[in-house]
Length: 234
Image 1: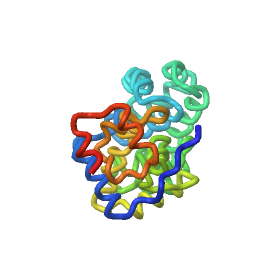
Image 2 (image 1 turned 30 degrees about the horizontal axis):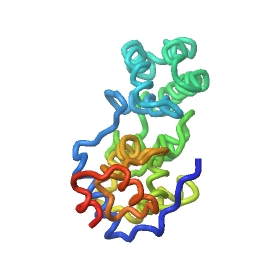
Image 3 (image 1 turned 180 degrees about the vertical axis):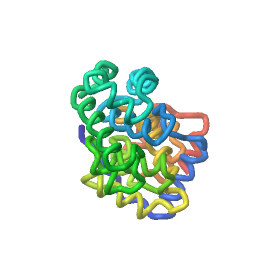
Image 4 (image 1 turned 30 degrees about the vertical axis):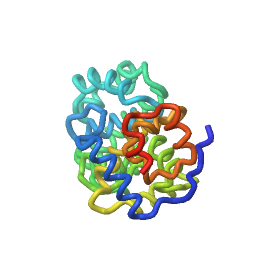
């Protein structure tokens, strides 16, 4: 699906205004994946590729109860992991990667999840996006993971236009104020998941309507005029 191009990139003041509006609308935003520690977070994020967080949470409840750490996951075995995750997409490849990932954690990191990007990206099934999520959520770094939602928002709104996820990531890092970069990861994902949707963006309830550069936003607002429409149009 083609993502509409913003009229122009947002300026840094507009980006701050946009992110601040999302923050005020959802101040307690956090990951919707269920996890207890860096290891379970890492596995959950690996499993979430091309799957919803809700579907991942359904399978990890049983998986983590039986295998809460890398050693237990290895004892469960690849077949045992696969038996838990058959309902999510790419489950065979994911079971294989999780098994190898656990072996590598034990062989090279004492069973702990590494806190540096290079070591994370060397793990099976872990790319830049997954590493960014773990660095952000588990280790408190201001890393920006660009999933399909954030890629869409970056281009649609003008917050950070880019042809690739890395271009969008770099644009977000450049435009979002440093003190807001870490939580912005969650604000943007949830905004894309529930408001700035792929097929039917709900511009009429977007807190960041004013600085957004989406060319169709006014037409979409007119279809569903809220009581506070004048405030949105300001």
